[in-house]
Image (cartoon, rainbow, N blue to C red):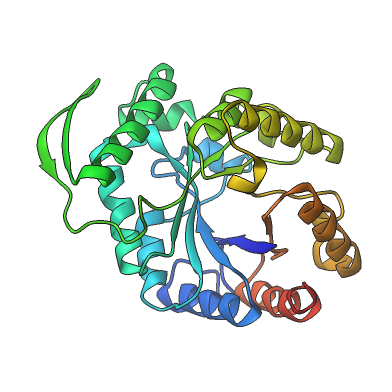
Length: 303
């Protein structure tokens, strides 16, 4: 089992953003010391104030943030969780991903999604109803460019006439591409070509806001994982061929019940899940760093 932490961007002990370089550096160093396997940033280039005031979360540009961590870490995988693919021209997206892979020495993993915030699409000048078509097109472009280094492609809103990708990516044939989301269409994409699946687990308002199917209970997750397994089999693949990020009620108890967390990790492993979220609180820097250290001592050391 491997563990990922999404960077808890909030306010530090002095009421300043966690985006200060010193805060980001201290957090990454703590993750490596505790045995966490990956740090992740999400993707919201133009969130609305309304969304932020009603439970949304701030982030910095994921490619810039991951590039910063690439230079000060040696082991952590650097992950987007997730990249909203339709927000960017496919060549710009691929170039940014390639840069993270290069400067990290091949430690990049990209979880991809179609996005859900209509106001953000509007602000970025991207047609919301085109998001699925733009997603599929961008993945085709990225794979083709990584494969050949020279792109000839007539897209919906662009034309590539021999654009060169240089320097090239470290990981071959390309950095791992996982898919985020709960819909059947997402699991079908994973089954056809994905390197991993990162569902949005839990109930409440989050799945509704994200315009996706709710996977709230352990039974929901088991059922969705079984469906993915069947889809993979139809494409000549299996769960052993991909990574899966998952959690159970027991692991969501976090550091409040380390024994239950460890039991849940064992169950997830038996199910074929390869990654789960390390239980790090979104508090002050001091609180979060303390949680990272406790995770290393009470959980990671026993897995």
